[in-house]
Amino acid sequence: MAKKRSVGVTVFGIVAIIISVLHVLPCILILTTTYQIRLGDIILVISIALIGFAFGFSGIFLLRLKNWARILFMFQMVYLAVILIAFRPFCFLMWLMKSGIEDCLKSLFAWLVCLVLPCSIFIYFFTRPKVKEQFR
Image (cartoon, rainbow, N blue to C red; front, side, top):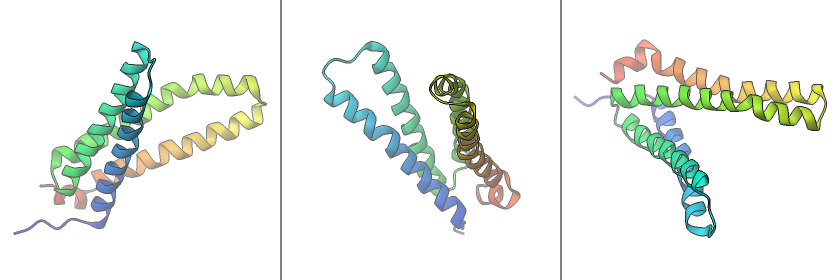
């Protein structure tokens, strides 16, 4: 008996693969076209590429309905949110020095909506009982 995959799982699997490509391709371009690159930059580029490969790996196996890929994808979304939220105060302070507080609050609100909302949707979707049942 073949497992049926919902449209949401298909969409999120494809989104994970697209996120993977968007992480890995720039890293490959940076590593192959930059002549003078520092060690710290190499480590950063390689870590971004590893995150991209992990997204691609989980996206492919999400499409194959593997339960561990569902869990890996949720951890990746939480990891991405935590890293970006942890990095945000630095960006917020830099923005505050350049512009007024009103622009900063708008930027912070947009950042939270663009980051927290998609991560929450992904996690909510993958923890629903109907979706969990597909991965068993």
